[in-house]
Image 1 (spheres, rainbow, N blue to C red):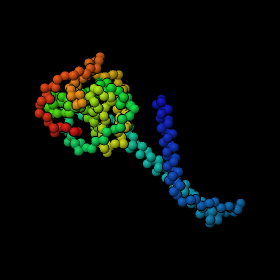
Image 2: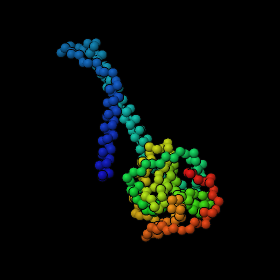
Image 3: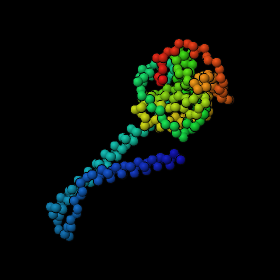
Image 4: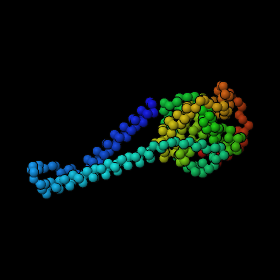
Length: 258
């Protein structure tokens, strides 16, 4: 749909909603005094003057009410639809501050939808995430890389703070063998998760292509470690022996989900 046409449709819907709300509010007002016949050439009597005064007051009330409804509608629209969704990735070294702020969060997963983000093979999605946001906040070899543990059964984790207030997690579903990813956010923002997922899908697939990356993944069902990634030309997933850092002592205080 062209942008200009989409904008026109939005404006029409807003005007229709405004008119409906004005009608609802006007219907709640007391009924108007029915007009009475006035003799031609005769000055208005007391009843006629009262009727005209009531009619004038109702017109003032209606105008004031319409202005108030329009102002409230505009406020509701601005509050419910942010002008811009800003994704701020949590860098690997900033995990402590994120956990300090959101450790007690109740997480809610967004339902799968027929978006490109849900139907594309996970390695391709991971390459697009690398292109847009860089390396993950954490992946399976986080202990070797930065000294604190991730979850070996999760290939990658991207943590975000959206619009400076909404915590969001992105995780793979089955390492390089799955499709799409899991998007979870704070339960208090559950109604906004579908909108965030749609915005993320548009953001990722607007890019020209993936960037190279390398991850490790321990498949619980397959009982096998894998090295997986993209080398700039091909995606690859190869079985490997358990990496040496697996035998290192885990630092559980950094785990955000279990």
